Amino acid sequence: MVATSWGKDSIVLCDLAVEVLGPCTLLHQASPYELPGVDPIVDHYRVRGCEIVTLSPTRTLAEYIDWLRDVGLCYERADKRLVNRAKTDRGIAWCLDHDVAVELLGLTAAESVHRRRMLRARGLLYRSARGLWVGNPLAWWEPEDIWAHIALRELLGRGATAGGAVYSSRVATPSASTSTVSPTCTTSSVATTTWWPPSPRILPWYSRTHSAAWRPPAGRRPRTMATWARPTPSMLSWSYIATTR
Image (tube, rainbow, N blue to C red):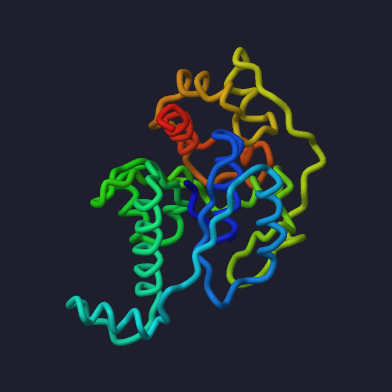
Protein backbone atom coordinates (compact mmCIF):
# COMPACT_ATOMS: atom_id res chain seq x y z
CA MET A 1 0.00 0.00 0.00
CA VAL A 2 1.21 3.51 -0.85
CA ALA A 3 0.25 6.39 1.43
CA THR A 4 -0.26 9.60 -0.53
CA SER A 5 -1.17 13.23 0.14
CA TRP A 6 -1.20 14.02 -3.62
CA GLY A 7 1.67 16.48 -3.12
CA LYS A 8 4.86 16.54 -5.19
CA ASP A 9 6.67 13.83 -3.20
CA SER A 10 3.58 11.64 -3.11
CA ILE A 11 2.89 11.63 -6.83
CA VAL A 12 6.52 10.71 -7.52
CA LEU A 13 6.23 7.85 -5.02
CA CYS A 14 2.98 6.69 -6.63
CA ASP A 15 4.52 6.84 -10.10
CA LEU A 16 7.54 4.78 -9.04
CA ALA A 17 5.34 2.27 -7.20
CA VAL A 18 3.12 1.67 -10.22
CA GLU A 19 6.17 1.45 -12.51
CA VAL A 20 7.95 -1.15 -10.37
CA LEU A 21 5.15 -2.99 -8.55
CA GLY A 22 2.27 -2.56 -10.98
CA PRO A 23 -1.24 -1.35 -10.02
CA CYS A 24 -1.47 -1.04 -6.25
CA THR A 25 -3.56 0.48 -3.48
CA LEU A 26 -3.14 4.22 -2.89
CA LEU A 27 -4.35 5.44 0.50
CA HIS A 28 -5.22 9.12 0.92
CA GLN A 29 -6.34 10.68 4.18
CA ALA A 30 -8.66 13.50 3.21
CA SER A 31 -9.11 16.81 4.99
CA PRO A 32 -11.65 19.62 4.55
CA TYR A 33 -8.97 21.87 3.04
CA GLU A 34 -7.84 19.86 0.01
CA LEU A 35 -5.44 21.72 -2.27
CA PRO A 36 -6.60 22.34 -5.84
CA GLY A 37 -5.59 19.96 -8.59
CA VAL A 38 -6.26 16.72 -6.71
CA ASP A 39 -8.99 15.30 -8.99
CA PRO A 40 -6.81 15.03 -12.16
CA ILE A 41 -4.07 13.10 -10.36
CA VAL A 42 -6.60 10.74 -8.77
CA ASP A 43 -8.10 10.05 -12.20
CA HIS A 44 -4.60 9.54 -13.64
CA TYR A 45 -3.75 6.73 -11.21
CA ARG A 46 -7.23 5.22 -11.39
CA VAL A 47 -6.77 4.86 -15.15
CA ARG A 48 -3.44 3.13 -14.48
CA GLY A 49 -5.34 0.46 -12.54
CA CYS A 50 -4.75 1.61 -8.97
CA GLU A 51 -7.30 1.21 -6.20
CA ILE A 52 -7.86 4.64 -4.63
CA VAL A 53 -8.87 4.56 -0.96
CA THR A 54 -9.86 7.85 0.67
CA LEU A 55 -10.29 8.06 4.44
CA SER A 56 -12.44 10.87 5.78
CA PRO A 57 -11.86 12.31 9.27
CA THR A 58 -13.82 10.56 12.02
CA ARG A 59 -13.16 13.27 14.60
CA THR A 60 -12.69 17.01 14.50
CA LEU A 61 -9.31 18.26 15.72
CA ALA A 62 -10.96 19.48 18.93
CA GLU A 63 -12.46 16.03 19.52
CA TYR A 64 -9.10 14.41 18.86
CA ILE A 65 -7.40 16.70 21.40
CA ASP A 66 -10.03 15.73 23.98
CA TRP A 67 -9.44 12.04 23.24
CA LEU A 68 -5.66 12.41 23.65
CA ARG A 69 -6.19 14.10 27.00
CA ASP A 70 -8.42 11.22 28.08
CA VAL A 71 -5.58 8.74 27.46
CA GLY A 72 -3.05 10.91 29.29
CA LEU A 73 -1.42 12.89 26.45
CA CYS A 74 -1.64 16.65 26.92
CA TYR A 75 -2.27 18.76 23.84
CA GLU A 76 -3.51 22.34 24.15
CA ARG A 77 -4.01 23.22 20.50
CA ALA A 78 -4.12 21.79 17.00
CA ASP A 79 -0.62 21.96 15.55
CA LYS A 80 1.17 20.07 12.77
CA ARG A 81 2.43 17.44 15.18
CA LEU A 82 -1.10 16.69 16.34
CA VAL A 83 -2.45 16.48 12.79
CA ASN A 84 0.37 14.11 11.80
CA ARG A 85 -0.30 11.94 14.84
CA ALA A 86 -4.00 11.72 14.01
CA LYS A 87 -3.26 10.70 10.41
CA THR A 88 -0.63 8.17 11.49
CA ASP A 89 -3.02 6.49 13.94
CA ARG A 90 -5.81 6.34 11.37
CA GLY A 91 -3.55 5.07 8.59
CA ILE A 92 -2.01 2.32 10.71
CA ALA A 93 -5.46 1.23 11.89
CA TRP A 94 -6.64 0.91 8.28
CA CYS A 95 -3.54 -1.10 7.31
CA LEU A 96 -3.98 -3.54 10.19
CA ASP A 97 -7.70 -3.96 9.45
CA HIS A 98 -6.96 -4.79 5.80
CA ASP A 99 -3.93 -7.04 6.39
CA VAL A 100 -1.48 -4.69 4.69
CA ALA A 101 2.06 -6.06 4.94
CA VAL A 102 4.09 -3.06 3.69
CA GLU A 103 3.25 0.65 3.74
CA LEU A 104 5.27 2.95 1.46
CA LEU A 105 5.71 6.60 2.49
CA GLY A 106 7.05 9.58 0.56
CA LEU A 107 9.23 10.92 3.38
CA THR A 108 12.49 12.65 2.48
CA ALA A 109 15.46 13.61 4.63
CA ALA A 110 15.50 17.05 3.02
CA GLU A 111 12.24 17.99 4.77
CA SER A 112 13.75 18.62 8.20
CA VAL A 113 16.59 17.75 10.57
CA HIS A 114 14.22 15.56 12.60
CA ARG A 115 13.17 13.63 9.50
CA ARG A 116 16.82 13.15 8.48
CA ARG A 117 17.74 11.75 11.89
CA MET A 118 14.73 9.43 11.87
CA LEU A 119 15.53 8.04 8.42
CA ARG A 120 19.19 7.52 9.30
CA ALA A 121 18.22 5.64 12.44
CA ARG A 122 15.48 3.47 10.90
CA GLY A 123 16.71 3.05 7.33
CA LEU A 124 14.78 2.64 4.10
CA LEU A 125 12.71 -0.28 5.37
CA TYR A 126 11.84 -1.01 8.99
CA ARG A 127 9.21 -2.77 11.07
CA SER A 128 7.00 -0.48 13.16
CA ALA A 129 6.02 -1.13 16.76
CA ARG A 130 2.63 -2.43 15.58
CA GLY A 131 4.19 -5.00 13.27
CA LEU A 132 3.71 -3.12 9.99
CA TRP A 133 6.64 -2.89 7.56
CA VAL A 134 7.25 0.72 6.50
CA GLY A 135 9.30 1.68 3.44
CA ASN A 136 10.75 5.09 2.54
CA PRO A 137 12.08 4.75 -1.04
CA LEU A 138 12.48 8.53 -1.50
CA ALA A 139 14.42 8.99 1.74
CA TRP A 140 17.57 10.46 0.19
CA TRP A 141 16.06 12.20 -2.82
CA GLU A 142 16.76 15.92 -3.08
CA PRO A 143 14.05 18.43 -4.10
CA GLU A 144 15.64 18.77 -7.54
CA ASP A 145 15.40 14.98 -7.97
CA ILE A 146 11.68 15.16 -7.23
CA TRP A 147 11.02 17.97 -9.70
CA ALA A 148 13.23 16.36 -12.36
CA HIS A 149 11.20 13.17 -12.09
CA ILE A 150 7.94 15.12 -12.36
CA ALA A 151 9.23 16.82 -15.51
CA LEU A 152 10.73 13.71 -17.10
CA ARG A 153 7.62 11.62 -16.45
CA GLU A 154 5.31 14.47 -17.53
CA LEU A 155 3.41 14.52 -14.25
CA LEU A 156 2.99 18.29 -14.35
CA GLY A 157 -0.57 19.55 -14.18
CA ARG A 158 -1.70 16.34 -12.46
CA GLY A 159 -1.90 17.62 -8.94
CA ALA A 160 1.74 18.21 -7.97
CA THR A 161 1.59 20.73 -5.14
CA ALA A 162 4.12 22.35 -2.85
CA GLY A 163 3.77 25.20 -0.42
CA GLY A 164 0.06 25.50 -1.14
CA ALA A 165 0.47 26.25 -4.86
CA VAL A 166 -0.18 24.10 -7.89
CA TYR A 167 2.86 23.69 -10.13
CA SER A 168 1.42 23.08 -13.59
CA SER A 169 4.03 24.89 -15.67
CA ARG A 170 6.92 25.90 -13.42
CA VAL A 171 9.28 23.21 -14.73
CA ALA A 172 9.74 22.71 -18.47
CA THR A 173 9.26 19.18 -19.74
CA PRO A 174 12.44 18.06 -21.57
CA SER A 175 12.15 17.34 -25.28
CA ALA A 176 14.35 14.25 -25.11
CA SER A 177 12.33 11.07 -25.01
CA THR A 178 12.81 8.50 -22.27
CA SER A 179 15.11 5.72 -23.37
CA THR A 180 15.91 2.28 -22.03
CA VAL A 181 19.35 1.47 -20.69
CA SER A 182 20.92 -1.83 -21.67
CA PRO A 183 22.29 -3.96 -18.80
CA THR A 184 25.63 -3.96 -20.66
CA CYS A 185 26.02 -0.18 -20.78
CA THR A 186 28.78 1.64 -18.92
CA THR A 187 28.49 3.81 -15.84
CA SER A 188 29.24 6.93 -17.87
CA SER A 189 26.39 6.20 -20.28
CA VAL A 190 23.99 5.74 -17.36
CA ALA A 191 24.89 9.21 -16.08
CA THR A 192 24.00 10.85 -19.39
CA THR A 193 20.98 8.81 -20.49
CA THR A 194 17.53 10.19 -19.76
CA TRP A 195 15.66 7.38 -18.06
CA TRP A 196 13.82 7.59 -14.77
CA PRO A 197 12.92 5.48 -12.94
CA PRO A 198 14.86 2.34 -13.85
CA SER A 199 12.67 -0.55 -14.95
CA PRO A 200 12.64 -3.78 -12.88
CA ARG A 201 14.88 -5.26 -15.60
CA ILE A 202 17.54 -2.63 -14.86
CA LEU A 203 17.48 -2.72 -11.06
CA PRO A 204 19.33 -6.06 -10.59
CA TRP A 205 22.13 -4.85 -12.87
CA TYR A 206 22.35 -1.52 -11.08
CA SER A 207 22.43 -3.23 -7.68
CA ARG A 208 25.37 -5.38 -8.79
CA THR A 209 27.42 -2.54 -10.22
CA HIS A 210 26.90 0.08 -7.50
CA SER A 211 27.17 -0.30 -3.76
CA ALA A 212 24.53 1.08 -1.40
CA ALA A 213 27.15 3.56 -0.16
CA TRP A 214 27.50 5.18 -3.60
CA ARG A 215 27.08 8.95 -3.57
CA PRO A 216 27.36 11.64 -6.25
CA PRO A 217 30.70 13.47 -6.39
CA ALA A 218 31.32 15.99 -3.62
CA GLY A 219 30.53 19.62 -4.23
CA ARG A 220 27.63 21.46 -5.78
CA ARG A 221 25.63 19.33 -8.19
CA PRO A 222 25.16 21.06 -11.57
CA ARG A 223 21.51 21.63 -12.42
CA THR A 224 21.46 19.66 -15.65
CA MET A 225 19.13 16.94 -16.83
CA ALA A 226 22.12 14.60 -17.22
CA THR A 227 22.82 14.91 -13.49
CA TRP A 228 19.14 14.65 -12.55
CA ALA A 229 18.75 11.52 -14.67
CA ARG A 230 21.45 9.75 -12.68
CA PRO A 231 19.94 7.12 -10.33
CA THR A 232 20.21 7.97 -6.65
CA PRO A 233 21.17 5.45 -3.93
CA SER A 234 17.58 5.37 -2.67
CA MET A 235 16.51 3.67 -5.89
CA LEU A 236 18.31 0.54 -4.71
CA SER A 237 15.55 0.14 -2.13
CA TRP A 238 13.05 -0.52 -4.91
CA SER A 239 14.81 -3.76 -5.88
CA TYR A 240 14.51 -4.88 -2.25
CA ILE A 241 10.87 -3.88 -1.90
CA ALA A 242 9.98 -5.44 -5.26
CA THR A 243 11.42 -8.79 -4.15
CA THR A 244 9.61 -8.71 -0.78
CA ARG A 245 6.23 -7.67 -2.14
